[in-house]
Amino acid sequence: MRRTATRALVRLVGPILLVVVLLRIDDRDAVLAAVAAASAGPLALAAALNVVNIHLKVVRWDALLRARGIRYPLRRAWSAYLTSLYVGMLTPGRVGDVLRIRYLRHDLGVPYAEGLATVVMDRLCDLYVLAGFVAVGVARYSEVIAGRLAWLTWGGIALTVLAPLVLLVPGLAERALLAVSRRIAKEPASGAEPDAASRFLVALRAHVGRGLLLTLPLTVATFVVNFVQGYLIATAIGLSLSLFDVTCLLAIANLLGLLPISIAGVGVRELFFSLVFPALGLGAEHGVTFGLLVFAVIYLGVVALGFVSWQLAPPPSEPSTAPADPARP
Image (cartoon, rainbow, N blue to C red; front, side, top):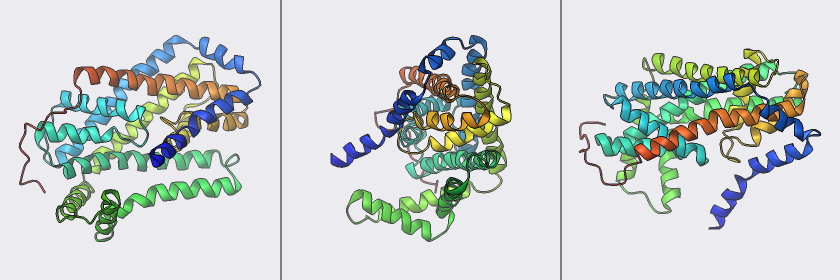
């Protein structure tokens, strides 16, 4: 219970940062006024693009599944993905991704190790493409992100890129996963655990190859849609930001949003924008307004879609009706 309470307190850092940022703004009424005066047309279009973004992600996941010989109906894949996004938006740590594994197991009898491999590769595509955009953003704002902050930022990008590669190194990854499973279970690993870890790694490494020629461009497309949404939000509140500036700003904010100190990056995003916007000739209140609208239009929009999906196709709780495929590694 003490560990759970500590984690809960850590995740409150983001909302606390948001409160601090709002209290430090000289003209807090300007934030509310800017939100109230935002143009409805660009905001509505940005919200509608959530559907396009999610569809691209579903198609990417479907491509990963098909690469392993798994045929999942697109409509059901939409339900599984939307519901997982809904839970993921409301909980830190990408917990919602586990639901997709459950859907696959229940509907098709896909082994958990195989389903986990597709979900992890799905996330790795996001991570590596985002790291590329972040590198461009850090270079763009090199005058602002300088000194020790620059070293820390570039070090974070390097760690983001290099750390997942451990999973692709034979031998090292197996030992690491076995150590993690023992730590979680707090007991010696059974003979089945190493086998499950091995199957997961085999399935994960099988995705490295020609399949990435489709999944990586799809990932880039999802981020481009996200950046266009940000540009539309900036236009709605009258910010003179180019699409390139919005791309750099949102890329860095998205990376910071992965920190396990808030849900959906709340507070961390607004703090970053409040620090960077003055360097762009804009007020800190503009940065906070932009961050709050990004959260409302993009993140809360996805939560709303996910809530509907949850009602129509809730996560399966009953035992699987599909037999597991014994031939699948």
